[in-house]
Image (cartoon, rainbow, N blue to C red; front, top):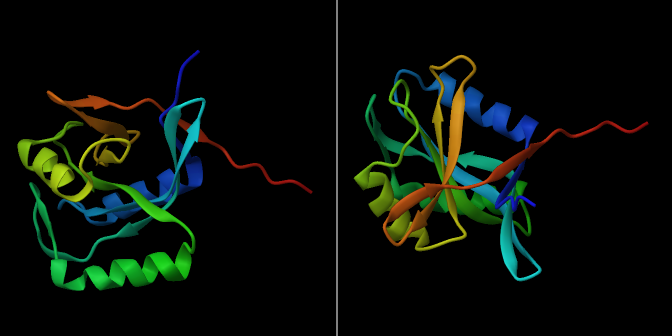
Length: 155
């Protein structure tokens, strides 16, 4: 049986990818919102939304978060996602592929430390757009298992 660390929804992922496309050719960055659960001794994440981060500077190779505006992230989290937490972060690598750079790893360690918080990298230039979730390990990082759920409308 496959254990999926990350559970998210098609509509959330599509909106996040659209945000990354909107910022092209520059990188963008933001925070993944949801909750952390435990079942049979294993942790897993549910991602129900995202909050784009205010950037101080961005170009094709990096995006610098404006730390002086982090209070806005907390306000938006409380307003739109009450009782939820930040479970990771995302950023785009337009045309550069899916990986975590040394700077990405250091940023993740500084903000989140170890698992189960994840990093999502999106390359919005591919067709269809490509993405991968990553989890830090002792020796760097590895891809995290994930599943994308499609919400159903019930009458």
